[in-house]
Image (cartoon, rainbow, N blue to C red; front, side):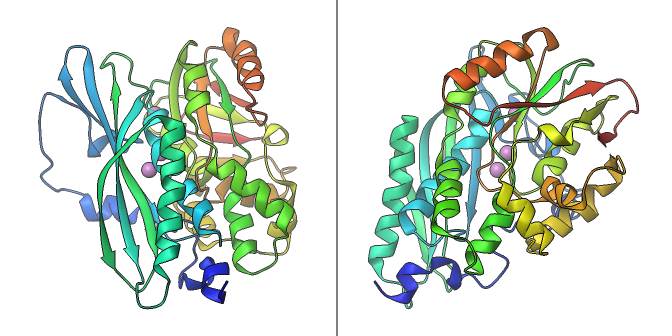
Length: 348
Ligand code: CO
Ligand code: CO
Ligand code: CO
């Protein structure tokens, strides 16, 4: 295999790791725009949720989302799987069932072999098959920087939409995948990550949030999101904003890659971690004992991260047990919703 085939991440000029526009920039760009008004638009742009929801009838609504990014791992098939798992995740985070998908591809046809494109799309198809989703089309352009992702459409009952809002005081917070993928992908790009940790992070990023979503559907979940580019605290802040409530996070309980803390200690952090801290740092009060590497981990942008659920306290242990029984080994209770201080995240 040529160098380009074995080191896909080398083709990425920027920070890699699903680098989003710095948080806050999009808000500024959209601020004051005349957004469409439609009674059937149940979740739209102004809500900043995981996906949009549009009602078709009293018992059916469409869930729509789109995610794409440059490669964060070197293996094209794995990149395709991860990108698809990540795109599907927003539908699961809304409580929906994904049904159809379309590829979106920017491919450097002058520098990469078409076999790479084929393997990426194969990886995407693998994830879609697992999800029971049909690929219906897509769009590919020639572009100097490789990017791949999918637009996904799912079904949901209009009364069963899980947004980021509606937290209740006393709810327990549960996270389903380990944190630290941004730091580990930075190490992969720097050529520092060994094959074992690389395989472990790929396997977790490629894992669908489908099973977790299926399990949660029979529990009293008040709010749900998936942890992606804004990091654990960035997405948690979106749940806390305007909730009139606060949350308390138990730093010691957070599922994470041990290697991520080691590399964070060496300063191996993706640019997104700094943007996330700048944007959402004001929401967070860290207890003095929380180590700086754990703070870094909590702002680390995730690719295809887990679901973050708020569940009624009396069902929390049963939900964790049910997730573990389905093989979701990282499922951890990581904190709780509290009345005070409002709109603050305390990390203790
Ligand atoms: Co999301
Ligand atoms: Co998304
Ligand atoms: Co949601």
